[in-house]
Length: 395
Ligand code: GLA
Image 1: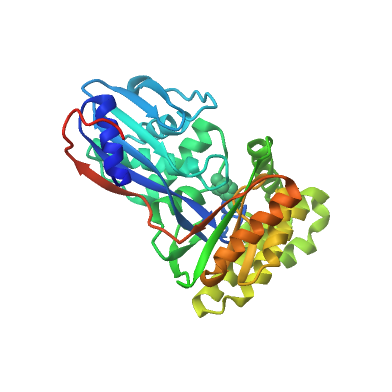
Image 2: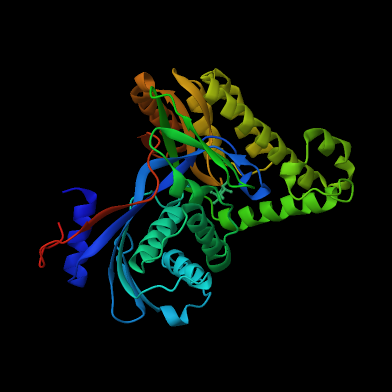
């Protein structure tokens, strides 16, 4: 049975009614890390792991959420949704319901069954996948139509204000707008985006280090504050700048003395990374992807040494990848402090790549890595709207 029919059956056996099924994917970022919250550019792709949501209406104004991953139910009242993060999975769907209602979208009470297949805590945006799929489902159930970019912004608001993670717009945007076979060049200031074709003989190979260092979210928020501090100090010399996006590397070097060494390094990462995204996008456009090897290596180094968001396990994984045949580029991906690397690998070599990197990583760290060979995939969609005979049991 395919995933959507499976979800309908499970929903039916739990809630004894019919449902519609929605899906939104996780993502991987090829280059442009920690640039989104600086109004910069990013180059992500949606991946073939999604969060699946089955939803059916209720007569009252309650949300009854069930997560299969956590085998737990949570109830909330749409008339009494308060910003009250608990640190648990339900913060994400409830945060989205809150953000939609705040924006004036009156929702309906609903039963919701959630099944996430994006690996959790791996830096592949399982949270954006939950937010976007739930938001999409809640809006459709209440007959609201919405522009996908607006849905992405409201999901980001849920994460910023309800969950308390000050993430940028990249993850939610690509979960909404991803296209099969394409990466997305996104201008995080204007939200203009362009699809760039990923050569069909190149696989996106994602290597999960299987570690997630605890300080992740708080250090992420610190990086944002440091970048804001950089803008605030530099604006004394460069009036009119709004974000690090507006500062050139020459400007940064010229006015370096107004910054602490740490803030200078954070700014240098962001400014050079934005330059690398532009170069990478041109390389994809002209089909000359050989240059990605250097760009991705520089990106990793800059994230490790200037932004200081890598960790030994990510560094080992990248180092191993760079020695394999058929590799067009390798670097850490996502917020950092553990999680995954992204590797562009010739499809003909990806099996051998996975085997050798897994062996090398196990030998170096003792962890057995999960490695996923992905293609760029499709963004959020309604996948199934159907009756299923009552009484069907879950499989
Ligand atoms: C996390 C955030 C994104 C982005 C990346 C780093 O995934 O959710 O908004 O900032 O980190 O590029």
